[in-house]
View 1 (spheres, one colour):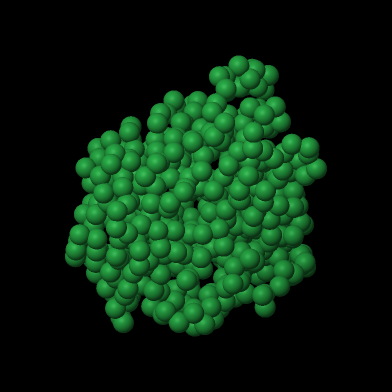
View 2 (spheres, one colour):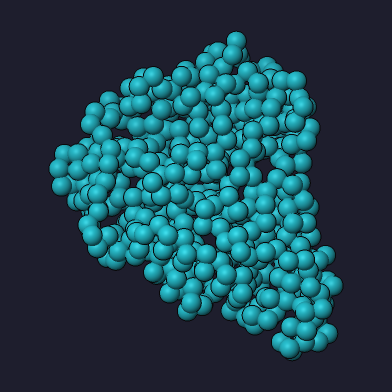
Amino acid sequence: MRRILLGLSVATSVMAAAMAPALAQGTVRVAVGTTLNNLDPAKTTIGDEYIYVHLVFNGLSRIDPDLTVKPDLAESWTTSEDLKTWTFKLRDGVKFHHGRTLDSEDVVATVKRILDPATGSRARTSLEMVESVDASGPLEVTFKLKFPYAGFADIFADRQLRIVAKDKLGELSTQPIGTGPFMFKSWSPGDRMELVKNPDYFEKGLPKLDGATIRIVPEAAARIAALESGAIDILWNLPYESVEKFEKHASIRVDSVPTPTWDGVILNNDRPPFNDPRVRKALALTIDKEALVELALFGQGAPTFSPLPPSHPYFNTELKFSPPDVAQAKKLMAEAGFPNGVDVPMQVPQEREQRVRLGVAVRDMARAAGIRINVERVPFASYAANVAGKAQMYVDGYFARPTVDTALYPFYHSTGSWNRQLWRYSEPRVDKILDQARQTNDEEARKKLFKEFQAVVEETQPSIIAYAMAHVNGVSKKVDGFKSTPMLWLELKNVTLKP
C-alpha cells in the first residue's frame, strides 16, 4: 500500500455547558473552535468541517492512522499497465443512512458532480486526470484517465471525495446522507451538531458509541475550561501553549501525532523583490527553523524543507538544517541590487495566533540581513480575496494531503492550481520530476525522484516552509480507544466511554 501524506465569555460559556442536559453515556462530546459553513462534503474547506465529513461519509479508499492507503467502499482496484484505466470493485451490501444499498451509479454521480464546475468543489483539481467515469457493472466503476497516474486510488481517501447518494444530492447541505459510522441527526449553526450511531455500518461491531456531539466553542479559553470541567470529552486541536498544562493532569491526557500539515511564509515569485531567487535565498539564510518550531508551536512540530515532513519515508535526510548565515544573506542581497536592504510588508491572519507568532519570528530573524519586514494583521476572512496570490509576502498554512502527488504537484508544478494562487513558482527541473513521479509505479524510483525534488526546492527557495506540525488533542481519561490521526480528522469508530 502506498504511503501518503483536519462568542461567549469564558465564564458564560462554561456556565452554559454545565447547565446543558446530560448526554447519554455512549455519546462522546467534542469541542471545535469554528462553526461549520458547509455540510456538503464536496464543498467543505476547513478542518472543523472535515471532522464531520470523516464521521458521516466514506471514500473509495481510506487513509489509516499509519498513513497507509487501504480499501474502504471499494473492496479492491486494478489498473492497466499504462496506468490510464482504473477499475474499482465496490463492497457488496453497503447501505446509505436512508437504507438504500450503495451501487456503482452513486460513485459515478459523485465524481461527475465534483467535476462539474458549477458544483464549486475544490476537489475538482484532484480529478483533473479523469477523462471518463462509467458504471461497468452494478458494483464496478471504471475510470479512463487523460494521462498515467500511479496514485489514482489514493486520492479517493481525501476529504471532499466522499461518496454520496445519487438520490439525495439536493439535500446534502441540509440533511446529508452518507455511509459512515455515524448518521447526521441535527445541526444548529454556531452551537452544535448531533450525530448518532449507524446501526447498519459495514464494519461489523462498529461504531461502539451511541453517538457524537460536536460543540462549537469559539474561544480557546472556553474550550479548555469545558474540557477541565468535564463538559466535553475531547478538545480537537488543543492549543500548543496549553499542552504542558495537561501533560500530568489527573483526568485529562494529551494525545499527539506528527502530521504533514504545514505553515509557511509565502513569497510571490512574480513580484519584486521575491522575483529574484537571490532575495528568496537570502531570506532563507536568516531563518532558524528549529527556533521557529519552539517560538510558533511551543515545540509541537519539526522543521522541514517542503510539505513532506521528517516522518515521511520520502523525506530527504541528506539535506541538513543549517544555522543562519547572515554574512552570505547580505552578500546575496547586495548582488540582487539591495546593498542597503529592503522594506517589505508581510500579512499575517490576526485570528491565527500561531501564524502571527511565525510571522513575528521571521521578521525578527530577517532584520539582521537588512530585510525589514512590516507585519500587518489581516482578518483571516480577507485572505482569499485580498491576500492569497496577490501580496508580496504573507503567512499561511495547509492541511495534509492524501498523497505525495496532491501534496506537491498542485503547489510546485508550474501549471499547479495552488502554485498559481500562492508563490507562482516555475522551475523546469521540478516540473520534470513531478511529471515523471506521476507516471511511475516503482516505489524506489518514486522515492528517488521526490528526494531530488526536495533538493531542488531547497536550492531555489520558492517560499519558506517553516515546519510540519503535530496534531494535538486534549482527551478526557474516561475516553478509551482514541488516537489522534495525521490527517487531523477524528477517528471515533473504536472509541468507548468509561462510566
